Amino acid sequence: MDWLERTAQLRQWTRSGVRAPHKPLLLLYALGRFQQDDDDELRYSAVEEDLKRLLAEYGPPHKTTPAYPFHHLVSDGVWEVRTAHGPGSPGSGVRELRAAEAAGRLAPELRRALRRQPSLLGRMARVLLDLHFPPSLHSELCEAVGLELELAETEPLPAGRQQRDRRMRELVLTAYEYQCAFCGYDGRIGAVPVGLEAAHVRWWAFGGPDDVDNGLCLCSLHHKLLDKGVLGVGDGHRVLVSQRFVGQSPAAREHVTALAGRPLIGPQAGVRPVAAAHRSWHTSQVFQGTPRPANAA
Image (cartoon, rainbow, N blue to C red; front, top):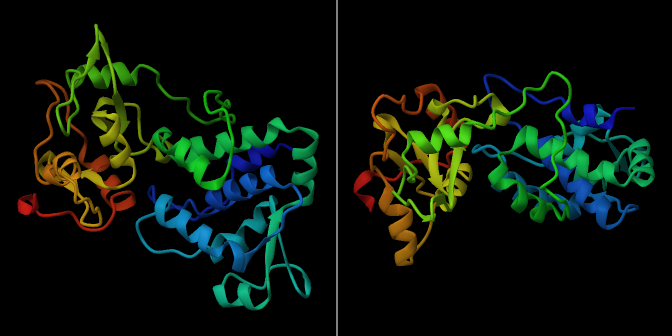
């Protein structure tokens, strides 16, 4: 059985690029727990709060419940659920799972495969990370689910999956003249830029192309905040700052809240700015809540 292909083909509700990372997050969490204790069973009532936090931090902006993937991941052949009455999930409702004392864990065949081939766990995790989350979040997401991986190694994507264009970084940094489009940071050591990255506005994992009009040159801080939904790009190519962001220090005000409403820095003349379709996707699928008014800074 090709567990990597099965991992890549988790059945999810998708429409027009809508994010639904519920199953990938649960499977990453289960892999992390298996790595710590390969006989561990995850009682729903005991892991519900962990899963809620993962969905709140790495899931879509709208509210969701961990009961949905706990029940539905069974259909993908990688997960099983048991209750006090025997095998099988009682349903996708929180009350049903709690009342039945439901517990889940990786499917028996998958557990055996992971014990025979320990490297499979890391390869499955990298497929999940690459297909559902931007690279800027991979390390912290592994830490959040308790996974210890060597993320420098990359797993070839399954057949038919488009590979990334490695030229994008240089094209985007050149387009924005090697300065952060949000704050203007342009640090170098000699001729080498330091702390500048090419960010996808529409994530590559959700059909975002490796094109300059889907990219921004950002410093490491603002790249992370873009991918976490704290920052965005609105109409008129002005910076959006989420009202959910809280920071009282002068540094937080200067580097985040003061950006609200500012025009982007760049790109240089003749280069296409971020396309409206990519800005719209990020605003609906990643940006958290409502933007601050420009004068809130």
